[in-house]
Image (cartoon, rainbow, N blue to C red; front, top):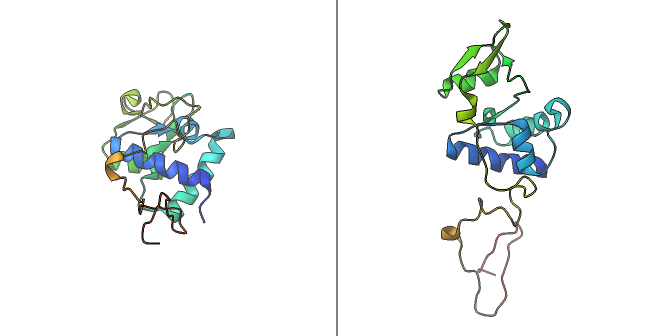
Length: 154
């Protein structure tokens, strides 16, 4: 079973896909309500779980950009970014690393404050009133299935 962190990061990856944007590990982790960890290790663990449990998600949208913005030249992540139309160029002073061209224009910017992680009450990005159904069967009680979804078949 996937960790709650991985589930939150999966939701953020879905947001990134819908927006056709990318985000660095730090921003994704902060949005999910945790720290990316030393050298992004917590995010790496989440992405490993996501790749295993949800292979259809575009894991490569969470990029391990350090302060210098360098990524390994022939890494799977760089290849996926290029396949999706992101241009990269050889980093100045390094033949083994690349940077995404004009990265700032591709980075996701969330309006929700960092202290309101995705899925929290303060985050309305996951709240789509058009999809909500009234599951009140007239007795004033809501009914939920074992997976936590409202269900009025009970």
